[in-house]
Image 1: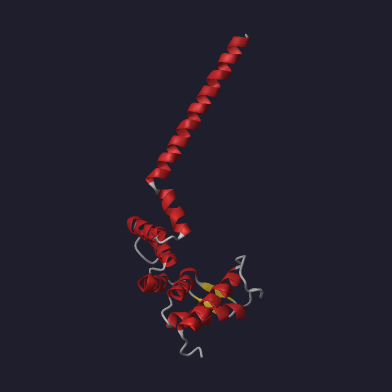
Image 2: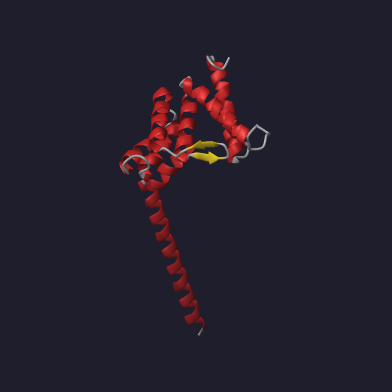
Length: 178
């Protein structure tokens, strides 16, 4: 009964929603073998809504994604609405600290999408997401860390030194052979 599902049914619905969304978005590795169709998208949204009604954090994050990116293909139209996306992400975080939702909020603040552009708030959300184990957030944080910049500068410096040594060696050899 999908009108009043138990936790196991909600989990199955959210898992199916993820699979249908992966197929619809063209991701590889999904267990669903059906081609991307309007029916698949409608099923995914139905399953997401079942999860949202049960306050499932993953479903809340997916619903936020639908509003973050917008869906406008065929018969289904969900207009990009960053405020609604933000509210679903915050609910997902509130329910269990959904790290994907933290990442998406970080992006919203970083880019100023539906919220004031605020790099410190973006960095805070990204760090929380990374600390929670979200790999994409870890990469985002690493790319912006002081260590990354120091490594980059050291690498450039070493490259310049090596180039100078090579040039000096070539000049020495050319002069020696004369």
